[in-house]
Every structure is written in structure tokens, then in C-alpha cells.
Length: 245
Image 1 (tube, rainbow, N blue to C red):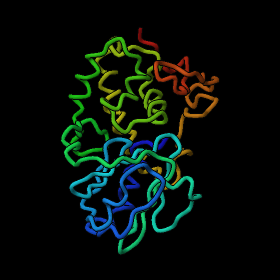
Image 2 (image 1 turned 45 degrees about the horizontal axis):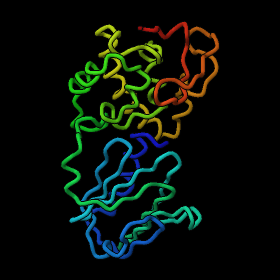
Image 3 (image 1 turned 30 degrees about the vertical axis):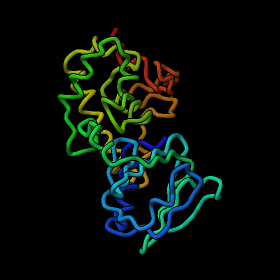
Image 4 (image 1 turned 180 degrees about the vertical axis):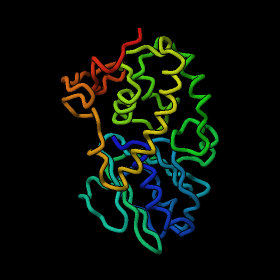
């Protein structure tokens, strides 16, 4: 599943279409395509893993889900995977195998933009307050809660917990204050590292534990398990990541 930094890269690539008129709209998404031609693409906003293309009076919400992808100016996938193709005066934007919804622009007022870890509006104290409200939640679930850490996905989760030395089954309410602060700050810090490495095409080279088998600190085998309510894959070191319960 694409994580927040990957969606930010998508936004940057789509900037050339801002201010341009939609010439045509097609694809197999179940939306009213005939409403889109003639509208101006005014703004590209992101909230974590979701994209919002503002084409007033609508916004096109795009969620790449687990296997979604996109391309600019070149159709690179079979037609059966093409959910939305927007043709502009200066090029084309394609979205594949993803969720597409055409919503009233007012929906943007309902979003807590301060929960997006990559946003300038990010509020760490607000995230900390939300965490304290759910003391029995495992940290592996808390990091994937998009209401707290919008944009954080499984890779970021695993790497952050290794960075701060916390076992994924630790309970939020049992974390010492310094560890709770580290959880919040590193969720954002690692997301920006992810973004930089992704742009440099060295993301996987910088993974310390995600999909790895040996701990880079102690040399012992890493544990792989599907943990928490989410049952997402966790890679962690039993020695170097302390369990707080």
C-alpha cells in the first residue's frame, strides 16, 4: 500500500496540471465522468494516503488502496485496470486499480488536516492527546491509525518502532513519557526520511528491519509476526525493542 510520502510525490508530479481545464474524463470508475470535462483543476490536496483533486464544485477523491498506481502522460497499464484518465491541455493523468469517488467540495471541511504527518499543519501535541485517550491500544495499531498519524503505513510503523526501541505489542498507556514523545516525533521524522529516500531511489536500501531477517544492532534473528487488530506484518527485535505492558 502506498504510504503518505509516495502520495506527496504523486502530488508534486501532478502540479503541472493545476489551473488547466479537463478536456475529457474516462475510465471504469463508477463516477459521473460527464460532469468533469470543462472544469478547472484548481488544487491538489493530500491527506495521508488519500488524494483530493479540487475541480470546483467537486473534489475527486483518490485512494490507491493496496495495489493502486498512477502515471503521468503515458498509459502504462491494461484498460481493465484504468479507473480514471483525465486529459488536460498539456498532458494526461492516469489512475489504476484504486478507489475513485466524486464528492462535493464541502467534504474537505470535515478533514482534520492537522493529523497528516507530512503537512505543515501537523500538530504533535494533538497526536499525543489522541494517543493518551486510548491507553490499551498496541503501538503497532496506534501508528496505523489514520486519525492520529495520517500517512503512516506499515513500513514506517516497523522502522519507527525499531528506531525508538519499542516492541510493537507495547501498550500506548504503558509507554514512558520520553518514549511517547519519541513515537510522535519519529512518525514525522521517518516519513520525511522515507520521502527523501524514495526520491533518491534508495528507500529499500535504508530499511533496517522491514522485510529483514537479522537485527542490524545485535545480529540476532528478527521476529516476523502479524500483530494487533490490523494484523499487518511486524518485523522487530525481541532484544533491542522493549515490551511495555
